[in-house]
Image 1 (tube, rainbow over the protein chains, first blue to last red):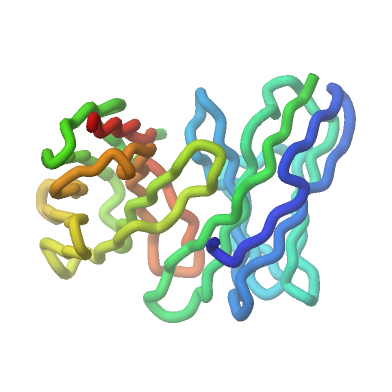
Image 2 (image 1 turned 135 degrees about the vertical axis):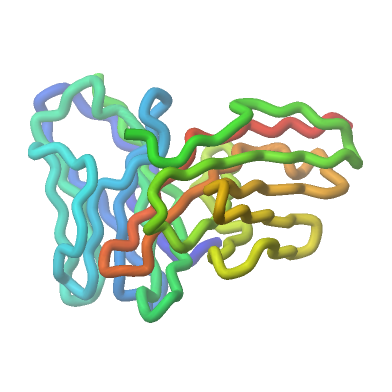
Length: 114
Length: 113
């Protein structure tokens, strides 16, 4: 158990809908990362937050957005869903200090768009 | 742009054998190179990591070899066990403000009993 929790574990929805994925980082970790894992694209970085502020953006679609709250949990919002958005979405957290960059991944949320 | 290339895509090894997975990177600004292990239905789990100031790091049966001039690094699993059967990902990141991981495409390892 990495200490990172993600809810829900599975999500099935229809095209055009909007969903919210939730992540709670390990105790003490200030940084949260979101990654998408699909068969054709592999594991890809979406977005990073540090202590409530956006720190880096990767291949995140404009239909997707995220935020990190004062209690450090994070939410990834996916809207106007398309079939191609079906994937595993992982959240990772890290201490993010100095040279230390160990990222610990949650169990993921499997999103199925029908 | 694929910045981290991983091979082979799949690997079958006999129990007790050595499993070797290779990765090559392009961006010389990368300075942190972890390996992750992922079992079906689970999130990636950090296995071992190395920084470019050392050429080798060993933790138990797992060893990372790093060749900075060639921009390559590899994972060696000694005495491979059926329980090691999983997908392995190499990755790379910077130590600057943006520390996201850039992953290789993964290697599916099967260790036969």
